[in-house]
Amino acid sequence: MLKTFDLVLIGVMTATAAVTYTIKHRAELKLEEVHRLEAEIKLEEDTIDLLKADWALQSQPNRLERLVNAYSDELQLQPTDSTALVHAKELPMLKSEVPVPDVTEAKANGPSAKGATVASAKGAAGASKAQPVPAPAPRGAVESHGAVAPDGGAEDDTDADEIETGSVE
Image (cartoon, rainbow, N blue to C red; front, top):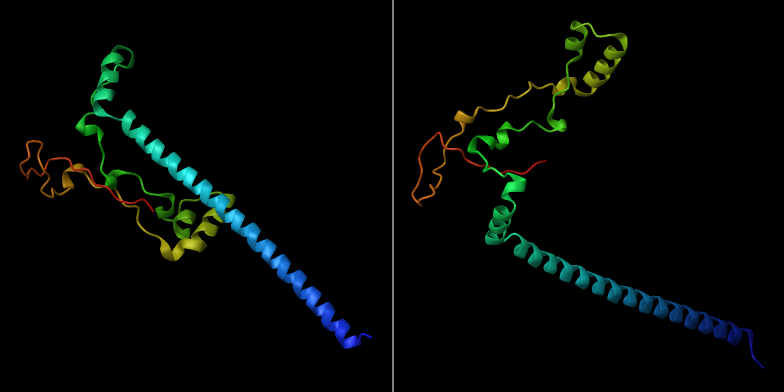
């Protein structure tokens, strides 16, 4: 005859077997999901490589020159003037860099009651951070850093335009 202790042990073994099977089954499902995601990643990488190759083919200079010549009457393209390029310092600042107006300036200008509350709300948040608005640097003020001339020699002309790059925050 089975004792109660034997019945408890049989119940524990059955529960342990069920939990082990459940964990094994979940692990197999996760492994299948990992394989599926790896296949999707491989497909995306292959697609990116294909698109990069297509871009290299589409942007070949001699192909673009052929297209410009073929459609020059319709497009009426003009070469870009060097005066049309701007430096990064001449671009407007980001909204996050715009200084908040001071509360006393807003009251001195005599805004309406609604404008005063808006100005005071903005001023309370940034009264200690008020900064003067920076003006863009004039083009002649940019220093030359020994740019290379098209003929291969070093160019020391301070009036030459430089293209400066930088990150946008």
